[in-house]
Length: 66
Image (cartoon, rainbow, N blue to C red; front, top):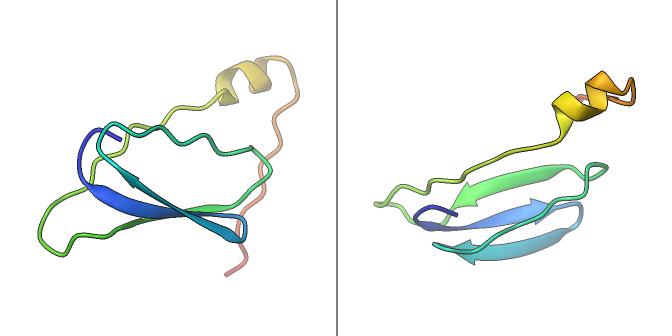
């Protein structure tokens, strides 16, 4: 995380994080991020391997129904 502090719900588990932490999410898990500060921003840097998976014909996307 670049700045701030928060919580990420990955599947059924919640993980708290702060500046300098790194979170890896398995591609088959839903994830929700929440800023735990009412007054300071939280900035996350996100990247994934979607371009490589698309190029290999292995990309599968599932969207939330709610």
